[in-house]
Length: 333
Image (tube, rainbow, N blue to C red; front, side):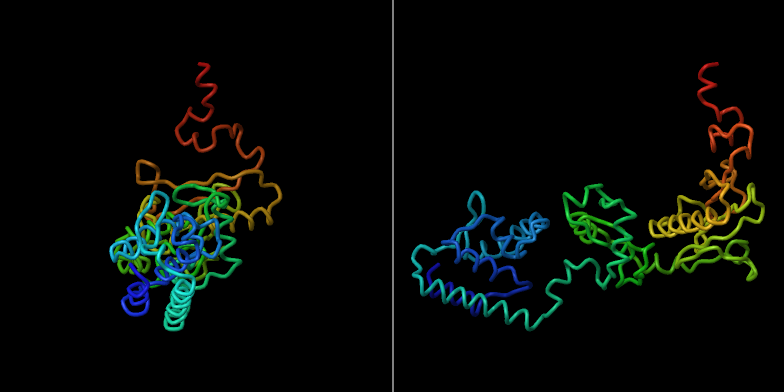
């Protein structure tokens, strides 16, 4: 491709869905016509090393594929080279670089902040404090693949996307690495309208769907409520329930699990402040009749424990089946 045809391509034939093509050509022009994929990615990314892997994939799948097909570049072992670069003089290279800059500015002027919408932490602004709380809850690891923030940049993702009614609240947010977040967006075909509508489901005959107005609420968020158990097995025994009528724990969405977990932490802090004698907790949910469930609206128990409240606390929840609590004693026998 000679100067005239390359100039025509940049000025007239280039069809842009993003800024990548002129950035790639400009990078090749600035490096004697040949760059590694990482060098091109670095130009696109402006030096954010933590996400170079993402933009290497972008380079291969978007401008690399398009420009190769149009005959502008050729794939080489470690990257791409600009076809016809060897016959360009310095003035022509400068003119083509300036033309790439013009195309970039023209596109940015037209699209503005929307250019980088796909790489934002969410489709709406997530305040820094809330973002930190989400990452802290995830222990600064991707909640899908488990990779550490030290190894790959983490993003705050809306479990139920904002465009489908998902709220900017901590129970609807999760920490995903940029790779998992990108994969989630590409493959998730859930009909979120049905998910959103399900959060409003109530059962007129359910005692938890129809809590008395005088019932003291210990804590609540958009998806869950915490209140004192009406038949406590220990003082300050609390229940956490989803607002939605869902039969048992395994029917909860991830957002509802997050919401319930948040309230468990909140109520735990409250009861510890109220009673300094508390030394432990049992946390659990009964699932179906065989598991001891009697109210078929999912509820999670937070039961404070104190020294001496039972003769032998060893085994904890294992004691729901008699004789199974002290498993070491059973092994000896």
